Image (cartoon, rainbow, N blue to C red):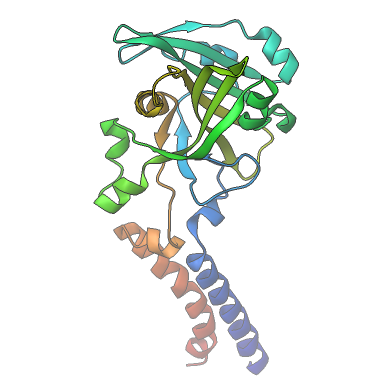
Amino acid sequence: MSFYRQYLTIIGVLSLTVVLSVLLLPLNMILAQEVTFIDTRSYWTSSEKVFVRTKMDLGSVEHMRQFPKMIGQWQGIDYETSQIEEVLNADVILLRAYQSPSFYQSIFLLVMQSGDLGSFHPPPVCYEALGFQIEGEAKEEIPIPSAEWVSYWRSEAEQSASLITANKLVVFKEDNGQVSERRVVLYFYVKKRPAADELTMVRVSALVPIDMPYDGVLSLTKGFMGEVIPNLFEFYNEERGSLATNLAKSGPGWLLMVVLVLIPLAIMAYPRWRRR
């Protein structure tokens, strides 16, 4: 009987340890779900990442063709991309010029996905290869005007944190010592966790009048990207806290935790109860 009691006590202690360990684990570790996020870095994760859900399959040519050609006051015109896809070994490329009656120049949208990370040369390298020079690089916060997106954020601090951070690039090209072309470029990457083979880049760019500061065009480009993002993604509030924290939010969850803890305790108490 003493051995029987010790045997069940050990089983009960081990079971209780396992139960408590599982309850205290972060929920996203238990679910091991695939999560998509926007980031400024292509090869590793930065503190600027924002978790999202995609509204369409970025790896599907058919889905990307259905991306809205009308965004606010902007009307899109598609470019033929088959040769670019072949050169870059990309799976999907959407290249579209959007025009507005109130702005005399186009804004260019590029969405590219590839399973070959070699397809993603950093935009500064690509523009330099095209004969441009780098005038400046920085980060820009893109405000998302969509009420549906902002509604996920409750406090003012959270609303501030919901801004999407993109890379900013200002480039120019010279001809006979004179600036002949300037561009403002905003871009970010879309990645998945756990690590997936495919990577997506979303880039918005616009020409800047040679004799004008780029601030006005930058503001316009940021506004356009802020309208593009809700058409591609919806905000995803990644579950935080332990399994116990999330179960405690409901009555059935509390009951389940109590039952899980009581079972090991009952195993440890059974020999004593039987002896009595």
